[in-house]
Amino acid sequence: MQDRVPWLDYLCNHIGLKEVPGAQHNPLIIEWGKQSGIDWWNNDEDAWCAVAVNGALINSGYPSTRSALARSFTRYGTRLSRPVRGAIVVFPRGSNPLYGHVGIVESVRSDGTIVIINGNSGNAVRRSVFRQSSILPDGIRWPPGAVAPAESEPHGADDAPLGARVLQMGSRGRDVEALQRDMNVLNYQLDVDGIFGGRTRDAVMRFETKRGLKGDGIADPAMLAALTAEVEDRKAREARRKTAEKAAAPIAGAGAAVTAGAAITSTVEAAQQLQTWDGATIIGVSVVALAVVVVAGVLLWRFAIRRAEGTPAEGLV
Image (cartoon, rainbow, N blue to C red):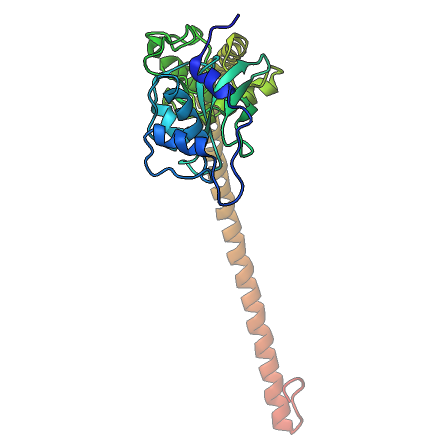
């Protein structure tokens, strides 16, 4: 038999609770808001998922966040490393960084999904299924004052070496930094900030999918083993390439010297040929110039003779 989780049990007991259509409002939803310290709360038209979770906590003897924002729970109580029964989980909603959705985990499935009890889902309290990979960073919480389950982030996890634990959305620490650095060796271009957020999760999912792994965005032992093997292979190939480049450098230098020598020889020969060609050109031009002078002299002589005889000069009319 599973241990009782009072706040989960409370919300489960209200599955089916709905908004009241029209101008009227469900009085219990309004009461939850007031109990949670949200003084302005007076309707069931605004998004009330956080109000439902806060109401479940207050009525189970635990403090609320005193906020109607789902993301207020990312700073609530104790952070857990992965979802467990009774954990409060927070998800993004749309592209606005202020918006979110929150519920309480009822069960964790082996396919990477979780079943949560949540309010304002189809305008009611109901069960819904979400992917674990969609949980926000720092979005798995346990109420203050309640004994945290064994699945909570272990003490000293921030200093854990890569491979000492499973990494997923919300994980933080030096092992996450090591994961991000290894992913960058494979050109995933992640920020090495030690936070397992959306971009890191997406990169892990792409890596897993390309290699026939689960593709759930969780850095588990199978994923980390494949990553380590590929990174080591990439580093080994890079080392061999650099070694080959160093070995080729003297040969390349000798080749460059030979090439330079050949270029110098060719230049000298070309200069000699150019000098010969220039001399021949000068002689040729001189001969042509002399011929032109002779022809011009003959034509002028003929022109003068014919002009004196009164006949037009050929070609000069």
